[in-house]
Image (cartoon, rainbow, N blue to C red; front, side, top):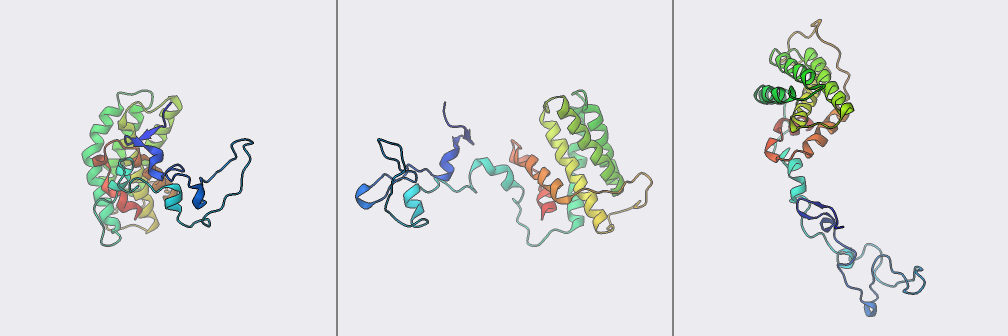
Amino acid sequence: HGVPTMGGDDAWALFGSDDDAATDSAAGVASKRPRSASSGDFVSVSGPAVGENDAARFGAPKASLYDDACFASARALWRHAESATPALNTFLDALIADAVTRAPTVATALRKHKPEGGAAADALLDAVRAAVELDWGAVGTFAKQTTDAHARQLNSGNWPDECWQLSHVLALGFRIAAACVVAVGGTENTKNENSTNSTTVADSLGSVALEALAMVSLMSDPAGVPHWLGSAIL
């Protein structure tokens, strides 16, 4: 019954150990939770004040958390350093380009899964087409239909393939984009603002962005993390 591992290493080793520093009774140093051998009661221990020399007392992390393989996907979000906050149009262009490239393959994979694969695929492709046409009201509608289909699939069981995760990230990206465009009253990358096919996007940007961030952090291949999501969060 070993300790669960992440990234091939002992997960708890990332945070140090209570046992890294040997007890030195002569110097008055002991573990954080000393107990008497006979009764199990807490005993008084002399030693450094709380917070003093904690690394020596309790052990320091074995490696930087930033560099650990567990967080590779999260690091990939900002692999290209931004000199300034990205412009909205930069984010929209990158999202559309990525979706046009990946959505057809994702949709084909989705259709292999019942009961909601077909509905998710149709809605995702509709969102992509609306984005290409810069009809952001329709994008918000179709993106919400896509994530709704994903949720219904989960009601029937787990997502059976990574295509569901990829579809969800793209759909969340479109929901963020549509909400941003609505929030700023449109951009030069907008048309059909009063389209009868559009609905008001009432997404909470914070919650949708956090959901997208959580989805990306679970990706098995950091190379597949969309760089536009890092820009969207910024």
